[in-house]
Image 1 (cartoon, rainbow, N blue to C red):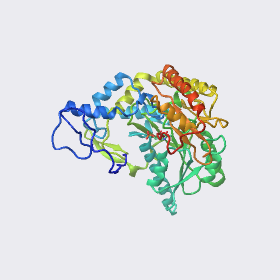
Image 2: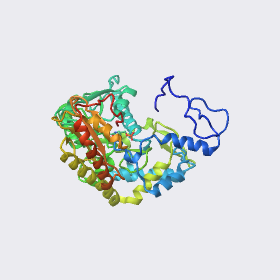
Image 3: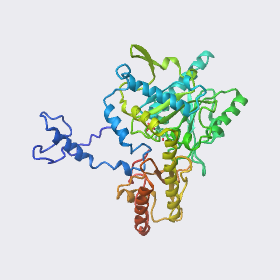
Image 4: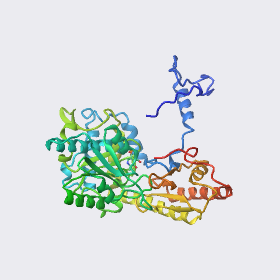
Length: 458
Ligand SMILES: Cc1ncc(COP(=O)(O)O)c(C=O)c1O
């Protein structure tokens, strides 16, 4: 939900669009009806100023779908995911997806691993965090100890959903800062921040800042060592928002998932590298022991009782249908092909940008098909915010931002390569960047900064 701006100075109308309607109201529901074609045209025209989603290299969220997936979404946009008894097939597809994903992430007994769809990774993160908090409370109460001061440990690079989780559910966030060329968590430092009040450690498979995978295996090893030393048994939740649908296909031997005994739950966004349009995420727990019974609500399902765990009630079913379509349509081979292609494009583009001269990539698409680049320290004519603005002139949306502690000195642009961003489109992007360079190099100094540059960041 965007917060409404209340500035009086905002325009009161969109002006003359059609002779039938002199002004389309913006702030008051009109008294009279309007012809649907006219209303459509007015809304359509207002949307022209939105960015072109295919040129959005900022978002991790899918911007291209196969026509068949779109068709299925059109056919199912009116199905409410919560009405399990009215739409039993959609509910079945959700469970098929949960089964498939549990196997993909190597749950010890995939038939016993509970899970569900969500609106995205943020909701999934809330559910994963809540389950860890509740289990910690139960353990503490059973031991006759206080539950006043829960904390959660993560790298400072976490996506904002974890800061939200901590704030909304009264859990103290303990953040491991970046240092030097380490742009994500340090396992030993994470373990050192844990104590008897730690509900869990979050590992990120695919950091939003630079696309790098956090070393989940090493985080678990550091916590094993902590347990051997102190007896503290700290669970790990993996936020695999992007990597959950990349690593299993491109690095099947990377042991980031339930193959680590300490990993109790994993989330991912179906609408990122799961290749669906915005509106679906997934969470899977290792087994029923890690999903506290009292967080589950029962809804009626075909005269039977179906357990649900969600923050929302009503939610569209179309994205779940499209997820199931993608799984059966692409299979393991298809997902591997699509993600490998995205990674090839990312790595080629990173190489080309590195070779241009003024830029230096800090990641090269070696993990997620995502990389970040900075302006070399000896280039003083312009900065990454100028680059982002220059690219915007041709419609490309490339975020520029500074890193958090202890690398606030570092500012980068980041490129997220997704399905639909082909080698050919990457060539067009590169051409535009090259065309902007002479002008940027003629500047006597940078013109934009984090406050007045482009503001899209995710
Ligand atoms: C690591 C990570 N976690 C969580 C999220 C939030 O995901 P969603 O947009 O699906 O809620 C993102 C989004 O970019 C992310 O990169």
